[in-house]
Length: 72
Image 1 (cartoon, helix red, strand yellow):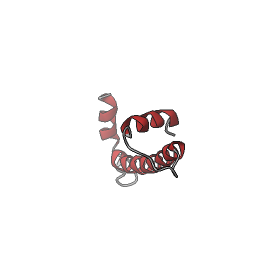
Image 2: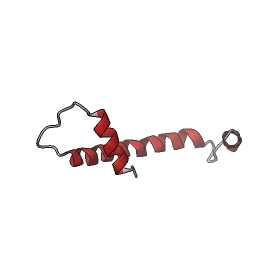
Image 3: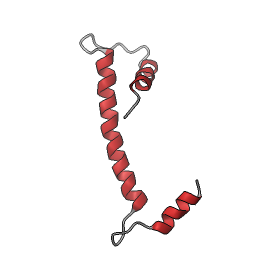
Image 4: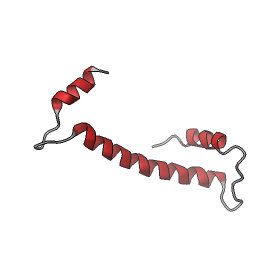
């Protein structure tokens, strides 16, 4: 989950000088942006899972993964 307060602060800075329509509250805007970002983040995680583990014949390439772990 995203930190709602961090997102609120980010949007406050990024939208400085932008007039938000009166029928959209800033809190609702923050919530909608959080939801949008979380949905996108989940898809990003799934894509990265596939490329990181890259299953071949039902098994990940453990040698490649070992190298990634060693390089931490």
